[in-house]
Image (cartoon, rainbow, N blue to C red; front, side):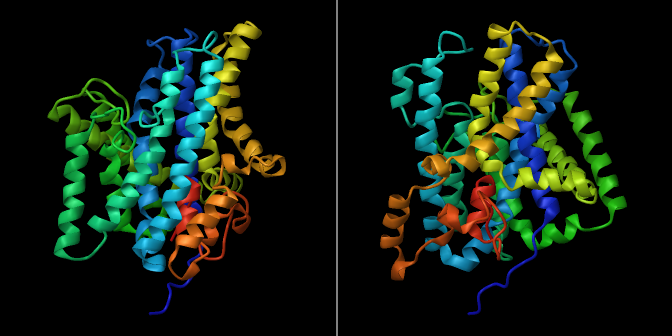
Length: 391
């Protein structure tokens, strides 16, 4: 069988990922400001914060799903798993230790508390790191379910994952891989749409996308008038009506984000910036918490600055920018393993691969930098853009 031909890069998909990861940094910045009393819950930003929490991780999940069918078609299920799982699990373990040690060291000046016992409990994710084992879990589950197939089995699997998303909404056990599993329906829907179809849709009429965005915004605003909960926040469990309205609100937010991406992709300078961020969501997602928390401590406790605008602007800008700088210089300092699988692990995986496959995209040298454009936007790009882009 002939291998799939290379597909042109979708700027709009990159823009969508960029918007979503900026939303993640913005959310986590606001949470820190609430906890440090710089921001109060009666602020208008509370509504914005709640709305973003409702759909930005669902958006990332759907965007990731776009690349699953192409990745499996190109490498087969076994190759697909070999390409994704080592990187995901390695980065989870490394950043669990890095983030945990930093949090323990700063326990006297930061919000919350992390102890050495937490550091040893790898099965309990720290903060935002739950997303990596979640991705590992869906990496295993989706090839089994294959919700993108145009068959009765595929349609049943797709419907089942959507129903599962509603039923699991708000269920957040502190177990790596299970935390956040409610997002599986969005990954499945993304895989059912697929990258070629999404590319064609996003390149469609701006007027249609403007109308879709307006409809998504209107539905999201309407849903926010009802009791809703973010599917990735532990709120002690919610009932079925709240689960349903929350999932609908998340879907409306995803449509809104896609519409904004389709329109912003047509604005040259803005699209280039957002697309660049979208190609580097891994680095931003991994390191932004440490940047945002450190900056807040320096501004508030070191410099005595409590101004909301200063905190918010600097945290978002540096929370996005400093991880990119860190990832760029890490290999020169022999710290590339913070954002990539180390050479010894790549060699171990390659040695165990069928016919000595070299798994090229697990190496940072094979992308134009973490993650940069490669010739065919294959499976590992989806994994390494969030987490890297693949086809």
